[in-house]
Image 1 (cartoon, one colour):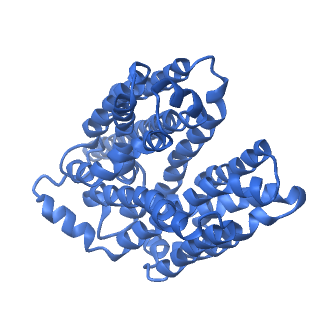
Image 2 (cartoon, rainbow, N blue to C red):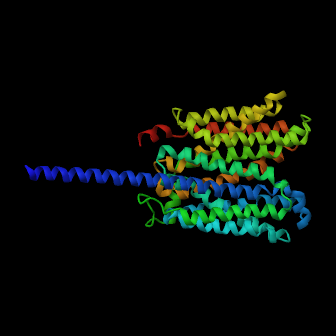
Image 3 (cartoon, helix red, strand yellow):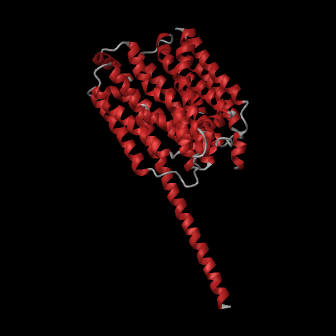
Length: 420
């Protein structure tokens, strides 16, 4: 009898001990998850802030470096070059080794470029430093779905993605809104440099390696990684969806202030504020869209609805009269930005991709996203529309409608996610 009681006590003690260990591990994991979110947020914010603080300083920078308008435009978009050139290869490498050292390398290079901009004395020096400044953000965006998928359960990937993506929008908004307040260009550069160094140090010091359950594709060939990703119909739909949404967004950023000023007769300051309301809407949607999408029966239905509403807003919002134009701009930004965190979450939501190929897939999506931001406004809308703002916004609205058509061919991701 005593023997059996002792055996029961030992088994009970063992069970309690295992439960306590499991609870401690889950508590540690939750703590690390928040560290991942916060540090990624700071890094993405600092990257966007550094890039877009240059725009309000255009006159001073052009005079200081003796630039043409074309040269200045190339400097402004230079941080996107690393993402276009290296996102796919960075994703492939990250699928074969741990993500932490890859991101660390990107953040180190990015902080060097951001911090040393005050040393530039001509176009080529500034261009090179701006290219270097984009490495950190490029490496993070290529692996963002993989990073979040490693640390968060599938049903939380879209939400955490939205929180991270809000950093870029806020960084862009604050960068454009505060740079003119600094006493000098170098002081503006210094703040951006400090932020980039802080994010680099935080990542290296506080981010641990991925959870032990994270698969690493050491035995796969690079060709196999790429073949697996490019054979996924849903990844291509997500990639072209990002091309269309980002193209639409950049058309609005480029044409809206001028349209409000030239056609509507709205003064320059108010036109700029109204344009920033679109960015505010995108910021809000980055956080709320993943939460709302979880309440809908499928991502496919959700993407179609916001695409239609976004196309209506893009075409009509700038024509709204009176005070209602302000909420119209915010809603337009919300609807066009709502699809971005969903598309960027695809690698971790698709069964054929998952953790093992998420880096490669994320790299492909990041590349396509930036290509859309450059190709659609620069080589399609501007040549076709010229100064015809109705046509420009009409073409941007068509981009959102084409996105709606594309998502019809998606599988029911929400249904699959709920079963896993």
